[in-house]
Image 1 (tube, helix red, strand yellow):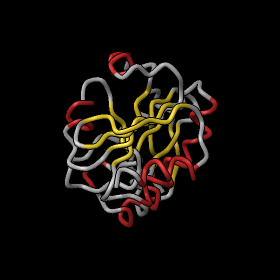
Image 2: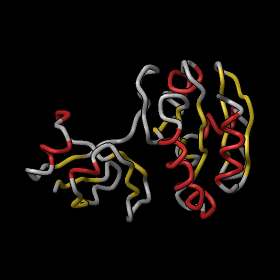
Image 3: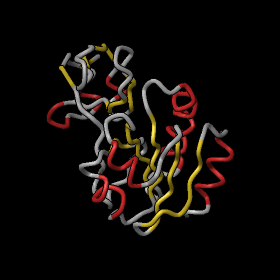
Amino acid sequence: MIDVSCPSCGETYHVSGEHVGRSLKCRRCERVFEVTVPGGAPAAASSQASTVASGVATAAPPAAATSHPVEVSDRDFEQSVLRSSQPVVVDFWASWCGPCRAIAPAIEQLATEYAGRITFAKLNADDNPRTMMTYGVQGLPTLVFFKDGREAGRLVGAHPKTNIKRAVEQLV
């Protein structure tokens, strides 16, 4: 078991080492972050000792496949999304948005299903107004699909996983 702290509010969770690399939603501030172990210790080793781990999922280099949505911001949007060598689905969301929370499991599942072919990213609307304005996002949740650095489509509002998957399939 390892102790994981939310990078935003410091709330601590006691989790199994097998959860390293998965996303966790903080029950206090509702921020989504990736369970990590300092120093990159393997999950098996991390379950042997209690370590403090914290971290935010960040966009991986284009060649790396990630099976969880990565967090992007105004600061790294161009590099992580527009310059990505593979298509990117950006989930514009907010912690107070019920429909955003409703589609989060579908986004997580699709990120796993399409790992290595499509990157799934999450952009917190409250913390990143510049990107929201740039892409004219006015309702949440909004999924914007990017291919070759350009918008290739979007879905506004909560949609069932089958609808999201249909839109994602057009990117592959």
